[in-house]
Image (tube, rainbow, N blue to C red; front, side, top):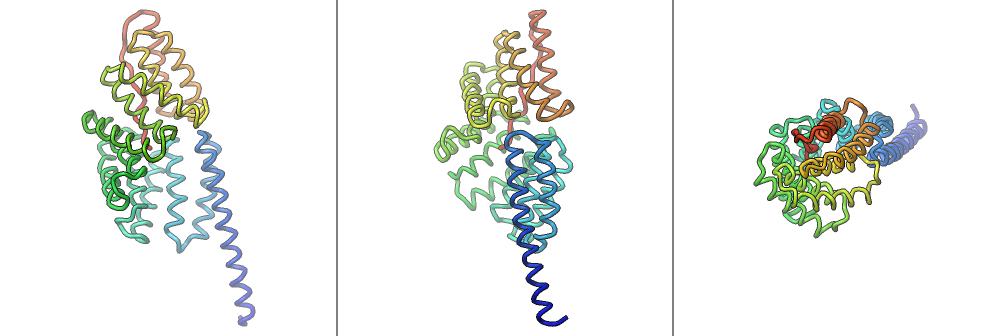
Length: 305
């Protein structure tokens, strides 16, 4: 091949790679937009295609490839496809440790996400070590008052909460919430999730007077930021319904469960764990409304930011 031919081929390859990387960015953008609105089924084809293209154009750029891996893993976690999510995150972790080293703050992001997957699949004791490692790495890199550190603290608290380690969980929720409100302001999605979790902890403890204003604030913030039909809104609706059951107001609880169940079912499908939990709670509330007898209820699992 002549030098001229080689040069032309190199330019063509550079253009192909450039357009491929732009395509990845747009696919991730559209997929993330759908995911953030709770449209998980619409997000999946965008993000799976983004990963397929990224694997051809980011062959020597582990840091950029892991961004796509992580984004798809977050989607799969929300869709309860936990094994697929975990595999993608472990792959991202290996890429980051190789390219940036084991102590880089981006590595902490993957530890955070791995903890969230184990929490979502009901294995919080397996997720706790990942979350603690993420907090330690992030605090060392960013200090103790950074909003990303606060999100890590709330995620760790959720894992502790799910294990019944209430004292440490409450301390971390309150600490993380204070940092978030100071750094990103009170009307932020991470603040709403932290409020939901803290309110759900108090609800589980039977402390309705403390739980109610916190959950109401979480709901108002989520509806303002996400709209009334987002699955994260349904999480707090489920918890408020449980609060009304605690008050003995089963009929009001049923109305809230109906709204939450409608949102969950459309966004997640009939077989998703959140749909099953919410439906069980609703059925018990219906029975309580008929008989006047109090049955066991389950708040939705604490959210991981």
